[in-house]
Image (cartoon, rainbow, N blue to C red; front, side, top):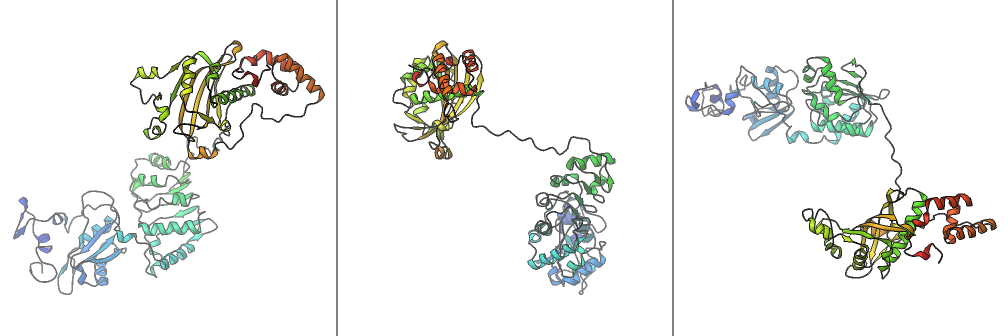
Length: 566
């Protein structure tokens, strides 16, 4: 029948003649064009190299045949005895079906022309994705349709029969041929995404504490769809993947989050890739370091330091950090005095806070969107990113000497600082130097940006200077726009005080001691009481500490009446 032309479903030039004609070099064949790319690969006597994974197979003009007759005829002459067809449908006049691996596809290819229909014509079977490139082929979209609700319920009942509650173990070995599913014509093939996801969903919703899972004999050639089990079944410890079609250990990377203690991979191509057992164990243990048994064999104890150690707990975050209570009081007192003058109408008295050789610099964020509404600060901004190649300007924008510093401060917008928002971190503290960073929020009270909220960070470096108190030698100010949360929290909390403890009622002896200490130290009653309280009202110890540390040298005299008696 091969030489008949114009009769039957197969017109000779399309398939029959092209396959039966001998191949000729130069691209010419007898009576027609050269062999097509498919005829060069189709050989009834030899194998063809298929892509690994799903294969799409078809019968040209196969729509005319009865489905059951066609599939049973193919099955009868095919070397593969397992069911060959996964999904059957027609595309135009072509009958098309889906097989799940290259072995089945190759076997089907060999039976082309070995079936004769009732009219005496040979049935030609083609493999649609024949290729010489070894690569995974995703299933067609048709396979990805979800199982029907009724099918899911049957699958759930089937899984329930296979579940051992005493062991928290689920046996899904060769589930595609389970009689309960086959009798209902339900196809559950776990190398299809829809089937695997349905199984994982049922596990997650009904047995999330599952410990042991058997997925052997399910023709799994990749584990992409099983990867969801890492998060949805976190207690899984025993996994059986034996007698599947996993070809490389890289598939195991998709399950690395599981804390497996037992794994079975025997019967998979990947287990035969290693020259010795040690390399095989090492490759698997690289993915599952807690593994104790592989393919039924107890493994030697792992070498490493993978003991379960509770994560270190970080200490609680502190709003501010001070070296000591004394330094805390000094800095808080200084900040209250400094910003009370800074926020006043006249900043000139700040001259007393700065050293003769003091230096000051200002910067704002580098990004233009932030700088657009910080215009009054932009012209004097010394952001290094903006002028990294301009050393002259960098030097010019530093304000030198206290006169220039305070004069520049007077040019900045009038402000009101939220003292309660201040966060202080002491960076360096020695007998001759105190460096600390102050962060907080302020509001502008005049000019174009009136009522605008800003956040700032300021680094003060100060030194004691004889009886002059605390002198600032370096002042770096960074200003940015306040965040919504910073604005919401601004000006709602009470400001901190040098002493956070309440002042108790004093007894008569304590009042006498307080008056004597105030007279001796020269401090006002409030600070004299604070010093005595810190030393448990021990007059001699308080006097010794006061004299030894020379606390009076650290207190600023910007607003002298704040502490010292006039």
